[in-house]
Amino acid sequence: MSTTISTHDVTLDDRTFRILRAGDPCAPTIIFLHGWPQDSTAWKEILLLAAHEYQCIAVDLPGIGGSKTTGPCGSKILLAHQIHDLIAHLGLKNVTMVGHDVGGMITFSYLREFGSLNSAVIMNTVIPGVAPWDDVIRIPWLWHFAFHSIPDLPEQVTANHLPAYFDYFYDATSAVPSSISKASRSQFVSSYQSPDSLRQGFEFYRALWKDAQENAASSDAISIPLLYLRGDQENGDINAYVAGFKQAGMTNIQSALVPGAGHFTPQENPADTWSAIRRFLRG
Image (cartoon, rainbow, N blue to C red; front, side):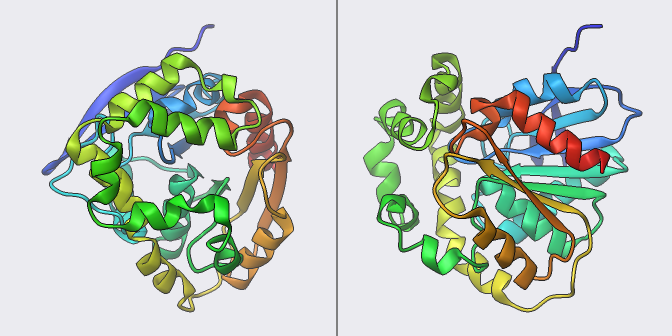
């Protein structure tokens, strides 16, 4: 039986969440959170694979694409609360959260704030305030962390050049840049081209320093199963990230590398990405 992906707008108070949905509504649920500069469509290939066994919901992060909010918000704790509101509104149970890049930062905050997930997967990201954060922010080729944190300037510089600006990141950090198709690139530009969405994208970065302070604060140990996943062509030693999660209180963590992929792993190698997640979920 073929799998279809449907698009829905979910209204909750003064917010709208754009979601992609696939799979059996009665099956255990996986919530997928994308990173920057992408939207929920980055997960389409994964959804088609995962929907044979799970209900899959990919969300445009608040303020991005079809998701609308009353104002920009970069705090990963506050964003985690918004995702929690959506999950509660939809009445979802037995939820696993999979977050890539910024979505992974939100997933980490969700684990600390709520601890109500069956399991979680964090992909291709460093968590602010969690080792090796202090080392990562010193890496010269991650210059955009600081640039995007400057008020107003990134919007002024990039507003009329989004295709070229976004292409730089897809091409520089992917092992297989062609895997992010022209259609996907055009879709992602459309999700950030409004002034409000463009600002929201940079607010993810402007909040990093406050996020780091909050994440560095001590918290109770968290035993929810966590998979840290990244492409094997992305820079950095995955063991350093795993050690950081353990120091931050994640007591039940596994890790895996996806072959032939860089930073945009879900699109570069969706089959092996889903295989790694599926193995983790099946225990």
